[in-house]
Image 1 (tube, rainbow, N blue to C red):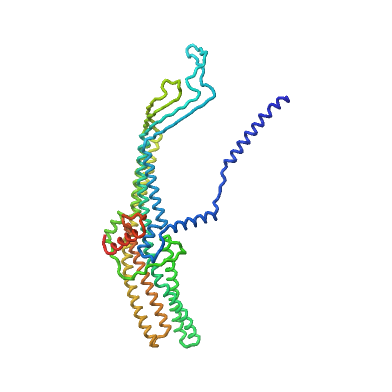
Image 2: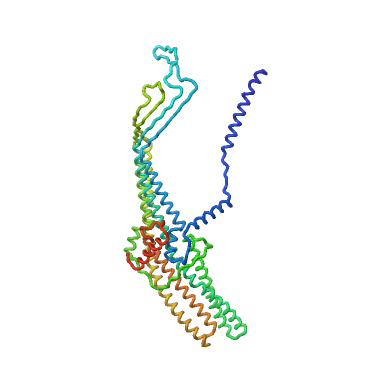
Length: 505
């Protein structure tokens, strides 16, 4: 009994050691979540942004409108995302095209053993067993084969998937067009507002200081009862209202320059100057009649074109579902080699065909077809709703552009009237016939009218860009990719927009 227990201990120890090893191995394979280090991650993002901004062309002088648009086309990060996505779709299409090729598979195998393979045999007729062992294989063997296979069903599905990939690449192109049109529209608005800020913020500060001083003087006169209380309060009310308007305009104008910097991918703390163009009340021509604009919008709007590609992809998915119901026919042609010296033929060719058919797909196909048809109906209805929205947007953009043109003309007339009033008020103040309070009020009103004229002009430029965006006409020439240098981009954009200012569709 003692001997039996001693004999069993090594077996128990081996089992314990085996289970301990397995447990240690499983523990080592356990994956523990490792959150990112926020400090290191934030520092990495800062360095990456600095590197991106440092790689951009330096600002060497005042930035004009078309250079601002060119910088947005070349450096805006949202636009770069769409460009990279378009490149990704092109690479995926190339990859899907390779799926249509036959499979060419090379395999190799080497086997080693410490003794000879072999054995005896028994006759199925007499039941007698051979007395001597024999072998038909070497102890060490190497095999290799090269097989070419092609499946008709896989080829059909790969062809349909490649067509879908081509449509996905076209969708990415439409999304890129949509993003750049929006960016150019935002650049034009932010640029003209920022120009107004550069032109008038100094004047606003000066007039605001004058208003503060005038308010102080008015309160002194009221306290000393030099003027009637109601007259002093009315004057103070007017000055406070003008101060509120000044504060609101200052906020809008200061933000405009930061928004423009973001669109051009300029660091927020980097200072830059803008070209100050001459102001004009002239309004560009409308790009065609309502019918022409709507027709072009239905043809060119990126959203409508994307919807058409989505419907095409859905139709192709229906084709793929139909192909999956067909039998699969696979042909294989192979070249084989075996190093076994006991074989009569160590090299040989093989050819085979195989047909298979998943019959359950036949019963599943009606449900798949109904689902895809329902999805197609949804896409069609969405396309119609989007077309109605586009029709409304074109109409609204046209009406807004016309109305903003009228407002610009009115703002220009108001500015001219304020300039004349200010000129006469200054002359009257010099002749001591008009009070200093009245002069301050007219100075502030004149500056505000000037800023409102600038803002009306910025609104007109925004409405003009929005008009083309509603139609879906590209805001850059067809030869532009965004990879050109800044001077080339600037010249191309300037030529395009100057031509649009006078030409019709």
